Amino acid sequence: MKLKNTIKEWPRDDQPREKLIAIGANNLSNSELLAILIHNGTRERSALTLAKDILKLGNDDLNELGTISIKQLTSVKGIGAAKAITIMAAMELGRRRQMGRMPHKQRFTTSKEMADFLKERLKDYQHEVFAVIYLNRSCKILSFDIISTGGITGTVADPRVILKHALEKNAVGLILSHNHPSGSLKPSKADEYLTEKIKQAAAFLDIKVLDHVIVSDAGYYSFADDGLL
Image (cartoon, rainbow, N blue to C red; front, side):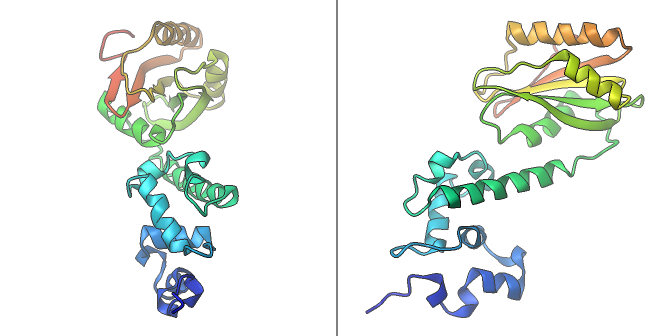
């Protein structure tokens, strides 16, 4: 007996693309949406089966799936480079859409609010990323910029780039930030040196460094809270 292994052989109402047209994308499961991205399965496995295997890589959590590499995706039998790239591109679009919701003109009142904002935007990076929040005279957000990316253990940020952006945006305040993929929240000597260097350079332009926040899965660390600014 031949099994209905390919999606095209399923009842029309069970086919992900047709379901999306009929009832909307928001009514499809994560695996059905992934199956649409995968498009075609293999002789032995349908696109939906492959999608479920991919979700398992991220423990059925889309946030975890967003951190998966191409190498990990292609470890699933039936997922080649082209399918893996399509999935990663979709994840990146989702990430950028989330970042695009940045509450412009929002004002932070605590370091925890800063940390929550930053963790949401830096959570998927598996390498260190240095970012800056630029503030106006009312300490409201003008923009959030990723300045540089590095390796697993560190990144380098150029104070000249940071201050150039600040002048272009007419910013008078800066919140420096970077993530620690290792989970550690303790600032390194290099972190302290860079913070002081940027602080001194900014002061010449009447721009104030208000904080440097380190975020990780373990929580956050605030230079200002610890009296280092």
